[in-house]
Amino acid sequence: DVQLVESGGGSVQAGGSLTLSCAASGTGDGSELKCMAWFRQAPGQEREGVASIYIGGGGGSTVYADSVKGRFTITQENAKDTLFVYLQMNSLKPEDTAMYYCAADLDWRARDGGVCYQEKTDFGHWGQGTQVTVS
Image 1 (tube, rainbow, N blue to C red):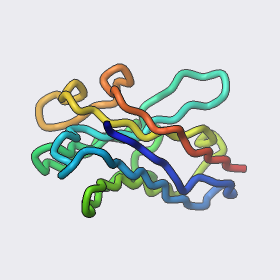
Image 2: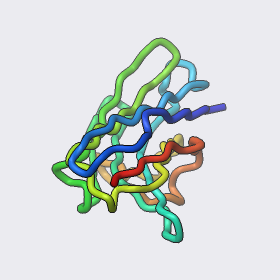
Image 3: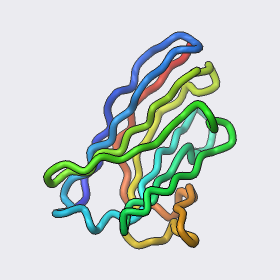
């Protein structure tokens, strides 16, 4: 079964940077992974999509929420038996404070054409989350 483990969260001052990592394992050669995404959820708010990346077939296309465009970058790195998905976050703002979750779609539910979108119901596998606090 797919296992997702996030790391890299922490506390940072406004204007600072953080890089989140998601290690996806349990997929053998990784071919089961189709779309990957980062979501976030602040207290009392709905979980929202932040960034997504097309994994299957080596597409690599990305989609960002308007609120993070130009500040966040999602990338992937393949290692033996593990796929890493990173979220580089620059120019952080207090409103970026949230629990950040990595999510995986193994069924192409999040795909539309050559991109993967961030509808949370399309992602069947989730990590435990990593907290980001911007003050």
